[in-house]
Image (tube, rainbow, N blue to C red):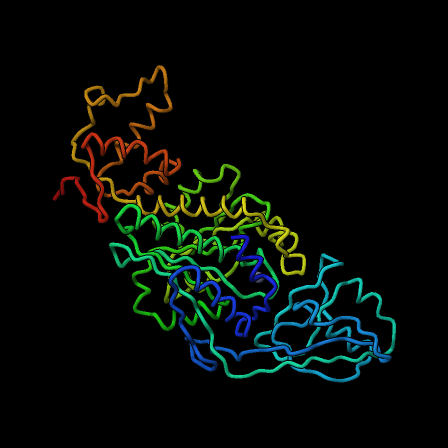
Length: 438
Ligand SMILES: [Zn+2]
């Protein structure tokens, strides 16, 4: 994962750009990937695919030719989708177009204006503070032209066409944690799912799709051009900011009562003891919004490593949207840990079925050798009975975990034992066993 990050991070991955395509092309050599193409101007529900943007050269100079900043040194020196500009400007006008980071005085900020037309440069606060001359020369040689928006899709075929969608965004020039980390963790998880299907000789139950795209417009383009697939999307997870040093965070979907939410939330408790969860939009906003939106309503959660919910700290991590978001702030160990968390959540999703009782009445536990002595383990005794009495063909493993406020694994261990004793079986559809009363 770190190798890919080192290879791709400094590319100028603006949403439709030569370097975005290069990065996607490099990733397509990692795993079988189909690339969906949407041309500039293409209608995507209420959106249109923007133009391709290229910045050929840009700099800021004093009038006597001393260069103060140069796009060749760092892609963040020009706002993404800046208009071209060539001229001498007074200091006040320059300062209106020279963006700095609100918190990090020695960092270049990431500023984008995809749909507002303006020119602009970005610099450190230190450089901005040093500008004392009356006028400066600005050159931005950028071009807008018809291009192709590209979405990469890795498909892991399952026994069922019902699918689980993972999404990460590949755009953002010269940044790492946001969101190359989501891309490489998603790819690594996809690789292991594919390998597991080969090794075990059985495909997973669900079909898995990993989408790698430019944020927002990439999701809208894909969804609007794959409407027949939307009803089969049972759940989803947006992956982002998975390399920095914060505990894992799981943000719920717009439908907190969905199986996706109940299952991933209950399974998350088993994955990162330091992790925390929060409702929809309370941690971070990204492509999951497009999937959760009206007319789509895929319950898509979000997995990240955000320092604290927005209400406590509006900044997801210190280096967010700046030139400090570099490979040094992420580690292979943390990416690997996030990949394990993701695979743990997907394993629970695969296992989340209705638990159907073959028994009637309360099970004679001693007779089956599953009785837990309440004098030795009162908690275990109570849990066993609380779980057993909910095995009625109308509740999934996740429903039971959610009702009892315990982890997915805690329920799984009991129902797996009941299954082994042939007291229950698992079903993908509800099988109510309660007698119908007139
Ligand atoms: Zn971002």
